[in-house]
Every structure is written in C-alpha cells, then in structure tokens.
Amino acid sequence: MEESTEIVEVPLEVGNSDFNQGVNLSGVQGAYSSNHLDTTSWVSIDISINSDQIMFNGKIVLVEDLQRLISENAYSPNEIVSLRVDANQTMDVVNQVQIELRRLNMRKINYITQNPKGGMVQSRWLLMPSVFTIPDFEKEPNARQYVSGMFVRLDSETINETQKKVKEFVETQIADNNSNYLVDASFVSNSRFVDYLNNLLHLQEAFDQIYEERAQNMFRKGLNGLTDEEFNEVRKRVPISILLSCIQP
Image (cartoon, rainbow, N blue to C red; front, top):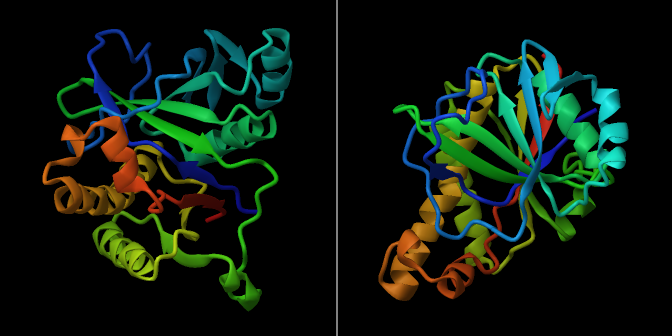
C-alpha cells in the first residue's frame, strides 16, 4: 500500500552549531531559503532516526510507542515534530514513523538537514491526512474530472529530466486556470534518506522556478524580496501539490 506526504514550505537555513545531536545528517545542495515560513507553530517533539533506531525526545522508542507518548504529553496538532534522520537511513522506518504521525494527526514536520558548509537547513512539510486516498488515474479515468495528475519516480539518474517535466506540467495547469492538480512522486522503501531528500528538493525546485518567474512578472522583483502579501499572491492557485508514495523495491 502506498503512503504519501505533501510539501508545503521550502527549507530555511539557520545557524546552530549543535543541531545534529549526534546524527549524520543529510547534506543538501543549493541555497534553499525563504522569508515566508510559517512561524505560528513551534517545535515540541524531537524525533531522530539512525540505524533503524527511533528516539523520541532523547529516549529510545518503537513506532507503536508514539501514540502513548503524544497522548501523555497532550501534544496538539498545531505543534511541529522535528525529525533528524541519518543520511544513510533507509526510508522504510522513516515512512513507518510518518504513517503513525499522520494517523495521530501530528502532521507538521520539520526535517533537520545540513548544507555543504555544515550549516543547518530546516525543511518544513505537512503530511497528508491519514484518510487521504490518491486517485488511480489509470483505473479510474473519471478521477481526472476533479484532479489532474502526473506520476514520477524519485530517481537520482533521471531527476533533472523529471524536474523539467513537472515544471512543464504545472505551467500547463496554470495556463488552463486549473489549481486542482497533483504530482505523485514514488520512492522505494530501501532508498537512503539523503537520496530521497535531495531528489525531492530538486523536484520542488520546479515550483520555485515558477514562483520566481511569477514574482518577476507580477512585482518586478525576486521571490525572497516579496512581502508576505505579495508572496501569497504569487503562490495563489499554484499550490506545491507533491504526493510522496513509498513502494516496495
């Protein structure tokens, strides 16, 4: 069965010399930044995953312990879960944690990674609701009446071509005045987290490129120079609709 997540924010680089907490964090390429991250929520839960071992606020736990711990501490869905994942950790355990967080409605995720210079990079995500079902466009052709879909594979060898195709697909949706679209990106469960994350960020760049072009056309300035109001106008009806599906190798 496939499981999915959705990206809602781009990463933000922050200076902090003690952010890895002993985890060999993934290195991400590029200078990802944004002045428009949601600051209305706060990080209350810290989860690290290394060599298939899960730690919750500094204590070793199992996936099935998460429900009890979240309930005992009365965490609310508005709080952010900070995830530190070892670069070489396979995605199967990460996916299991994400599935459980979705089920518990703790869907605001903040991935802690690092740039090539060793600086911290935060990548904010919003996991899909646990009841969400991805339409099967091949078996259910009528699904296209309410959503336009594109299927891609998060593969390092083809990610640049995939990024180009996604950008073209979204631009077509914009031209058709359609904001009800999604990109279903699959990855195999034995993928390394570092590969998964960098491929995903490459895919997200397709949207960043579109936003940058719209910012220049609408306001004659770059994306990071926009006010919050202008930024929202640039992104209006152009959502970052990426669904992530974990499949078996």
